[in-house]
Amino acid sequence: MANPSVALVVVDVQVDFCPGGALAVPQGNRVLEPINTLLHLVTMNHRPIVATRDWHPQTSSHFTSGGGRWPPHCVADSKGAAFHPDLLLPAHTIVVSKGLQPNENGYSAFDGIDDKQTSLLNILTAHSIEGVVVCGLATDYCVRATVLDARGFGFSTFVVVDAIAPVNLNETDGDDAEQAMHDAGAQMVDTAAVQRLLVQDDGSHRRR
Image 1: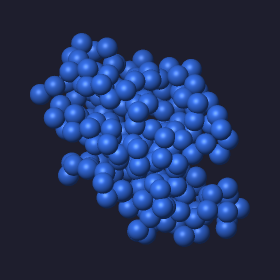
Image 2: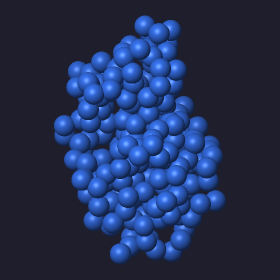
Image 3: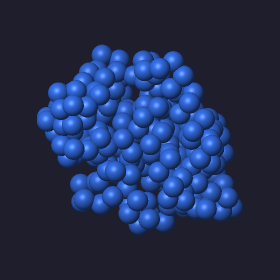
Image 4: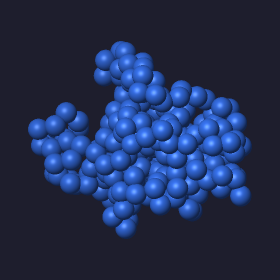
């Protein structure tokens, strides 16, 4: 088996964040093909896969109705909270839910837990993960927050730039988020670079 020290983290590729959803990311559908490629590559190389999802209660301070900035979206068990039907998640995917409490924003994947109440940090530690490959939605919010936390916890972090898309409430938000992730030490890569990364077995992606 290949060295399993890198995990793929797919952030919030949910119906409500894709075109037609309650809080759609412009061109959010464009991430599906590259992410499906990554899912295949990672599965073939026996690496762990984590898929995160917003999973908000109906009443939340995250929503405009509760004093927050966003319209209601990804309410737990709703159709909009489901993973996009074209996202080809394998059966062994670890699902991490976030924003579960009424007073939580849940931007970062590291704020989430799996169905056993295990945090993402503990999941990665249990799998001896030293590096994370991050993709998904949206660049300027949940991807950014996840990447910055990953760097804060010492993981080597790779952001797949052709598998993310921004909300861009302000025109430069996506670009600014990519710069912030780069400045924090994340490596900005494409799907081809991830394929090369996955065949490495030299320890170059160890936590630091």
